[in-house]
Length: 255
Image (cartoon, rainbow, N blue to C red; front, side):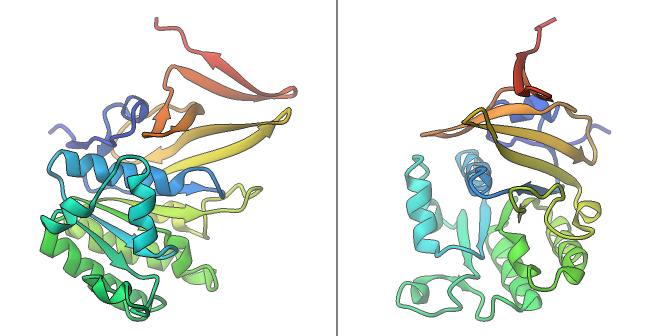
């Protein structure tokens, strides 16, 4: 039986994934500051909206109002989709404090309570019949208690996969960290995509590598990407290689 795929909406990425995300996969999107993790997740959700796939964004690190402003700067105006019941932001940032927060439909009163967050998320997904979910960032849920990291990701995976969602869990790492944002989380997730930003001879280079993706083959190479005024573009026909001289970009032959 062929695997059902979910298109990422990020130009070039589906080629690297050999067709897109396997449906219901929970993907850990790991990277340091400034690598484009939030943009990646928002672009994934907005592409779904353009194709009549409802989505939910769980905001743990930024005010929902600011998220809407940030998305609109890429041409992704989600307010219409919110009014049509196709998109929702779960506010796990404000705790319901402030006038703007009172206008949010889905609010987690105690963002540190993972069970409460899961209940609100489950309700939002059911109300919208959501197909896509992004949690930004999952690291916030266990950054002060890393021993529970794997358990938190497993809980979210059971809920999201059980509801039929294809999901991205944004995971923060430090600039020099080689891991994926918490002990054991790489084993709990179905897929891992790592975004990197490296300084080479005074210039910052962005690159992406798919570390694993359950249910599909994928490129095993590190590919460059750019953040444009319309979002992220990945270059599947180019490869970045680390050498003694630094980071080299090479084009792959079409043959």
